[in-house]
Image (cartoon, rainbow, N blue to C red; front, side, top):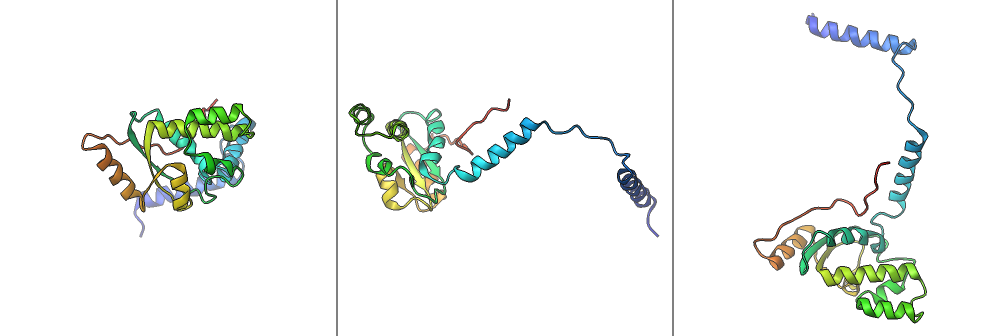
Length: 184
C-alpha cells in the first residue's frame, strides 16, 4: 500500500489537473507586448553579434578598463569565431597605432569609416590603460599580435600570466558580459 501523504499529494495533483483542464485555473496576467519585443530583440542581437568578432567583444574590455588600475592587466576570454572584424579590414591594420594618430587619420580622411575610427580610438585607449592577455579560439596569433594583445593558450594560463604580471596583491574582478542593457 502507498502511505497516506503520497495518496493525498497524488489526489491534489489529480484535482489540479482536472480543474485546469476545465478552465478553472487562475488566469495569469498576459505578458506586455513591449517585454516580448524586448526579449526577442535581445535574443536576436545576442545571436548576431555578441562575442562573434573582436569589434563587438571589445565592449567587455571597455567596461573592464573602468575597473582596472592604469598599468593593470585585463584577461579577455572570448570566442570571436569571425576574427577581428569581417566587415572592417582597416581595424587590424591600424589597431596598434596611438590615439593621436587615429585622430589625425580621421581628420585627414584616411579613415573614412567613422564607426571604425571610433572603435580604433576606443581600442587605443584600452591599450594605453592596461595590458591585455587574451585567450581566444577565433582570434589567430597574428590577430592578437595586431591588436597588441599577449597570447595565452588556455584561460588558466591567461589568469596565471596576469597574476605573475601584477604580483601577489593583485585583485581579480570578473565581468560576464560586454553590454549593460537597462530594464525599463
